Length: 214
Image 1: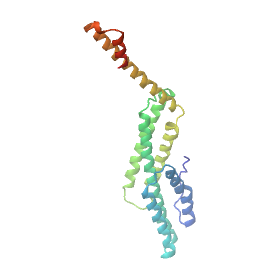
Image 2 (image 1 turned 120 degrees about the horizontal axis):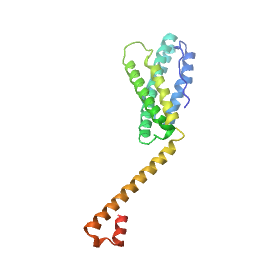
Image 3 (image 1 turned 135 degrees about the horizontal axis):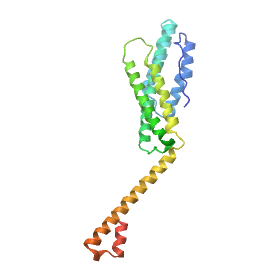
Image 4 (image 1 turned 90 degrees about the vertical axis):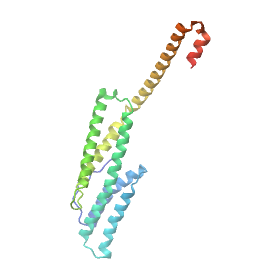
């Protein structure tokens, strides 16, 4: 996903507000739609934003005031997507932990992955704290959450989508089967050894075959 970071100034007109809506909010909306995970809260915030815009004509509210309130609701709608993206990143991180990736990039893959996830956790925690602070509708947490989103996308593209990850998965599968074969061979050898010393008269070709099969 190409993520269009928003660092623009607060819009004061409807025209500028719709630049933010089309170039940013709709991109995030389309993203969660493709993931089939559209947060209901996002729809509530978008509805509230357009309700404020309607008051310009219905109640003759000043345009800049209505736009400012609508802008706050649109930014809040983005926060829901950011938080959803963190959950997905956590799931991807856990999936990577279940795979032996120590052989990728001479161990640098694991080191950089853990460092990146630690940064995501730290920034997400900071963003949640900012959300709880009293203040105006500027949503101080927005920029921090936006940085978290960028990091989550980095985790997906550079780590979860790493070109050598399929190799690591195949290698892990080979190791599992090798370990299973080793345990089976050790178990069979131990059983035969015990019977060889305890009841050697039972150790014949048929008995050996039965132990191997079992």
